[in-house]
Length: 604
Figure: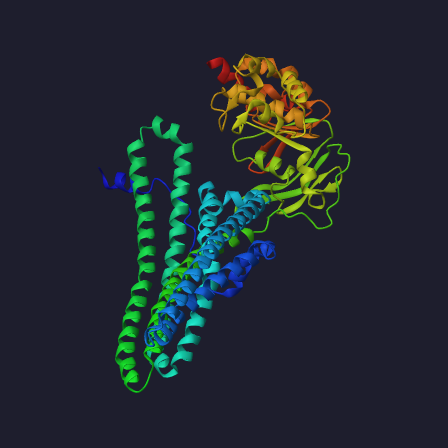
């Protein structure tokens, strides 16, 4: 293989790799995350905390009973009755602790699931309100990672981490208090290694956090490639690129694997330090404790001290694990909050006015627009679409046709000038009401997974079955639907794979008719329909366009001959406008386009 071919092979796919968000670990961010616990502060959280405190108190009491009281009040005096009482007390405490822990775990999981549900729902709702520019800049895979993977990664934090953090801190403070109560001198010597551990953990913190952030980035790339590969499988197979696609996936998957391996490696560094510290503490206890016993320290105190010291390193170790969970959670929460902090590029004003009864007149006043602040898609155009008229937009690819209809639905705002609906600037109107009055019929019709009935009803969720069927019948879709095995209850997969291109397009017409908009946009709506099918829906299309302002984008110029106005665009400028006959008489750009299409058809 040539060097050029190898280079092309290695660079055939490009994904926008998200930057690792570099922010210092701060409790402000954590506090924001913990706000999701607030709705449960008076229900699930209090009883979970009570069970946690009961279990923690029992764990702190048992070493004192076993280590000090058993030795000092039962074994040394030889009082076996007291020994039996103490053994019974320990058994009762363990039984209470068992039930307290069982309820704590149950309620913690319930709390965690509620919080995960709330975070995912708020994230999805927020994404639904974001503007088209947000989706232009991100792949579907990277968005899926935020909504699924990043939210899931918070599950351990909320089902175990937060409550365990509180429990271990309480346990640790309790143990330290008891150690100093039993022997301040011995406690100081034994706990001298704690500051060293704290210093080491702070050194590890940044590396662990960055490692988990990088995991999220690689997962985003992996999801993006999977999403693209599945959607583009027909193209892949048509060009026999399965092997190359597999090789590329292997590289992406390998990078994802390496990121996980590195993150778990960073996590694993903490526990050995804890174990080393516990060994050092035990050595100090045996060495210095033996000298204190010779100086008069009670054996029971020494044994109890040994029990508590053994317990001391357990919460320390768990705190390291919780801290790792916290770092994973922070890495994910930063990415989640990045989306939640994203503002719509097309915001609705706080004092937006209701639209009211829409007539359908659209006016473009000196409108300029650019998608990237470099090349202008529209260059100061002035247009008027009269209410009830059918307007056709004609021009080569990149002439500005799609940009005009995008501005009509306010998917974007003009970079200069104004777009008016019935004399009102679109920026002053309620966004939801505006889009309720504008319907799209696209060339690439999107069919949702579900029944045909549900897909048509998407245009008007409150429509009855009879209204849905009436819309389908009016548009000419009823006949083919009735021929299907289950008729309107036929299940179609995502994108309507069981339907032909023409049938999917008929469904989109029925969906638009059911929505009953005042403004209808047909973006190459009949381009995928054969001539015979197109003739069948002409009457339905007339009904669809009746009493509505309609804007049609069409390359097949024969479909727009009867339009009230035809607008010819070129590189963002309006070159010509008028009726079909007026433009043909003018013998300008439109005339040449019609002539070239006519020649091409007859040449075939």
